[in-house]
Length: 224
Image 1: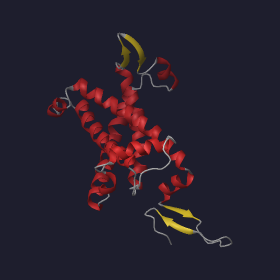
Image 2 (image 1 turned 60 degrees about the vertical axis):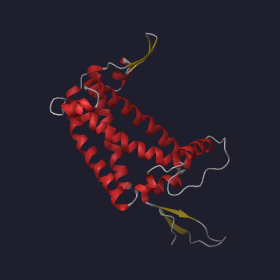
Image 3 (image 1 turned 135 degrees about the vertical axis):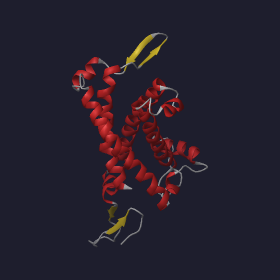
Image 4 (image 1 turned 180 degrees about the vertical axis):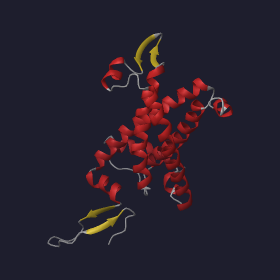
């Protein structure tokens, strides 16, 4: 699970970066109210600061190469969760949406206690399931944009070329927001939680005063 997670992180970063290089050639999206433009994706200063201009072919080359890594890693991840039974810990349960609200209130320090949880809490179940569905959406809409003639049926199911591009762009913004929230949650959880996500275990000192032998707690909660 950790390998799929850590492989996906740099791959997705390259996909977003190369996607912006491609988007520069036709940056048509903006947020406006009543005909008044509030924000344009993206300002010219943004392109100049990150040296994005006139790099369309470079962006396409990287995007179409790393999409294979993104797709294969995602397929292997989903396959593993199904075969291993890990999906039971990831898929939202009957009361997950109600409990997710309580988790949010707890994270905001409005509620003192968080709901009881297993390996993942209700909010994590919803978020991790959503990110899998977003990955599938990115793959399908990406193929519809990449080959709108060869995959005309897929392009049609995505609402046409332009709507597929809008969905693809919106999902990318969603990844960025998820990444920010994910990092904030990791920081709030502390260094021990982050290191255990990397190594698969966490060293917890549960011994009596004067005993110098800490217990080694694995990521499944068992101790040795």
